[in-house]
Length: 459
Ligand code: 5AD
Ligand code: SF4
Image (tube, rainbow, N blue to C red; front, side, top):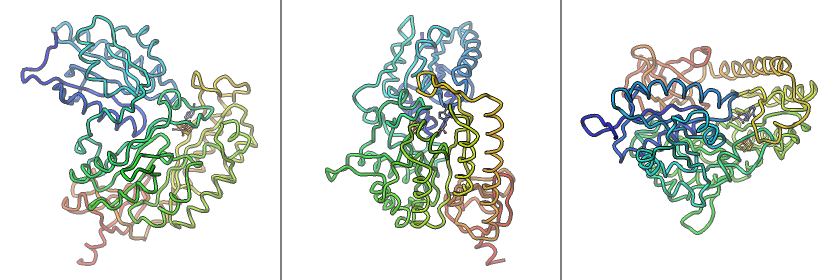
């Protein structure tokens, strides 16, 4: 029995953990379920289907999923007493890595699906509503899932004005600590024509900024209509020709895939924003080698130098891991030195935590927890100083801001600078979706405030 609300519609509640890629995937799952009558609802108790879209990168990811499942079981049981069925699905990287464990520990889960099988979700939902047991689908099919998904409706992507577009999935780099190559599979790129068509639709629906997504996005190599394979630089060039698309970003990149063409694109394409998230993970050559990163600290610094030559104002962001197996005080100091040498506008940093099945998890010389804690604190304090200095340096300057919506206070607008800083000003709603110059007056903890340059001119 499929107890739907009276209008024939069914409620869908998606809980998303993790990166922008997962946010995007959640929107795609909602898209494939729309033709079956599923519409988003705010709470699990109003939902005929609940999807947990999980992420394996963070610490104790599986435990968090199991505790959320415990709460959802209560909701499912309560709805069952009222004669309403709830289909419970676990998707994403935890599902991929721990599918069998999930069904063993949480037999009330109806569907377990890996990231490569979202296009088969409607079929799984149909099977789950017929089947007594659970449906599990965590294969890596030979066909790329891109070919089977309906287009995202741009309205559905977070923000609308700033939209996210997945162009690449998976990773072949096999960093020692990372589950992505196992959970997301081999590196695969979406065809150019399909990326451009979706970008145009997003722009038609109001997008002014598109962030291209992929686990290893600058490894992009998509089949193009001209019979060639295009890299990310060529794709960005074609995207920047779409009228109305003001800004292009991409994330996440690997240093080894920053080729000459992409560096040159930062010089040549005004729409390509001067902000780059380029994880380095460590500043020690010994640890970079143990991590299987395929580059040295010196090569990273050289790359930063070339990027700054091409685009002097480019702001850099990175990911760092402290306490990878074998990391000594001297290795950690090398990471601190790399940070001082580069100067980051922002960064994410993590304590190493073992992921089952990855090479580093079984390595000898695991670093003690208190040592990791102390290193993370020191590293974050340094990164915070750099972030504040970067933001302080914009005070008194005029920056073009893309306004994405209202701010928290009445009459306030909020938007983003080219360097991805959050900016607030007082201004009219008519500026939402526009790029306008703002004179930065003040740095707050995590944002900037300023005044509209136009308005000052008329004051
Ligand atoms: N432990 C700690 N941090 C990790 N990351 C990935 N795997 C691990 C792990 N096992 C971090 C990396 C990566 C970011 C997305 O998450 O820094 O770039
Ligand atoms: Fe994981 Fe990134 Fe390394 Fe690929 S490049 S294995 S996604 S950390």
